[in-house]
Image (tube, rainbow over all chains, first blue to last red; front, side):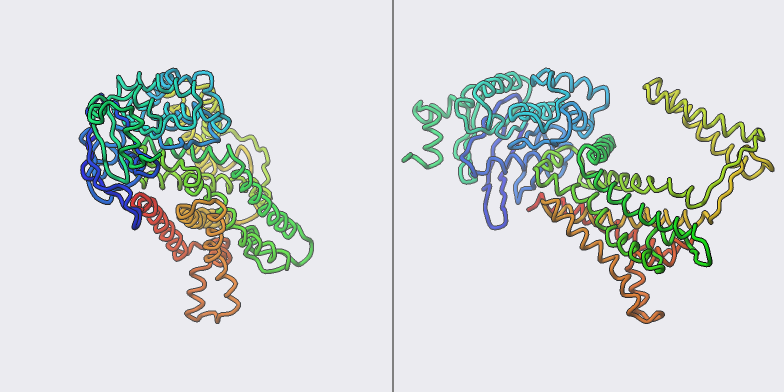
Length: 240
Length: 327
């Protein structure tokens, strides 16, 4: 579903992503791991079409994100890091606006909004002004937006950052349910979450892929160490 | 198409969910109210003093008496500030809060984003000017006398207006869409045709209107204002795509906008008839209004300037958004 080949991105002189290649099969849930600044967000932004790669190729469901950006973006539900929203709109207004932006017809939009409000536990907050919502609810609105057009691929950049433990557990449950219907690429720093929700992991460090495979295979390759130890070892900070 | 409409609707509504729309309306109405008050004072003054072109005073072009000149300078000095308030938030705010990321990852092309934002701010600008339409009957000293001659065309006009009212009510209560559309369209057609025929063919009328100033300079003034405004708005939109802070965007667009206003002050410095004069005239929007639009002249030179600058700025805005992806 997602195929990335030799992706490279420079920010001016800075080499943020170096020759990254991986692919995600349909129906898989993949954890996209890496320390801060390793290039995970940049890769996701390139996949979502917000940035353009310096070289390399990425396709979503067979559509190239550079040559056929509209079709590629139609196949993606993307939730950016820290989940920016328009603070002056109400939740249902925002979702109606996003539905229109994604080309849903009015009746379709109504149906989908009802579904995502239910799915993301936002039913009672649908008339709230987004600016007054707490971090957890804002995150849910972002997730509802990603799900709105029922895209086959979900790309979620740190969906559980800044949530409290019960919200994290809630979101994780939602991820697991969504993983049965969508192909998912999610980045996170919480490794227990990866173990709970993902089929496989991709670890990226200094802009390069250093580990890629199913959870079981990765564990086996590293002598059944806990994921946290594997992560620290791969990202070269073993002394900590 | 649906995506563009959705974005236009949001951008237009955003003027009213925050303070910005009201600030722009307030500033604009204070300026225009001041000028209106001066015009009415001049028009009703007793004695030999009067004014030749009321619209020239309304749009800040008259040079005497002194207070009218001051008000005119104030109007043109603050005009780019008002358009700047309207445009500065459009892209700069989205960049500042990061919402640009979710907007640009939606399945919508960059030119559609720019087009939608421009249409929304242009619609708000037209709304600003439409509030000044209430001054026109007063300026024209409009009088309506009931004559009560009911003719076929007059009846058509009245029925048309009734249809429009019914369509409006139907729209309000969200009744059958097709019926409401049919009522509205037929109402507009009936009212327009009936009104035109009633005014031109019938010897005696339902209502007798007297109108004491020339109507055409009003039309040309509004035409000029609509197109000149489009130019200032496009300039502001371009500036808004460069920076992250609304305040900086506003100041920059004011500065660039003044580039099309301040050359008007040079007209006292250059010989009329010289090449410099032609250049200064071409670049100074207040001069276009003082000499042409408010006197009922449609000069194509300023119109070409407005349209080309608008299109250039919109094109550059699209490129500037694209360039962000490549950064």
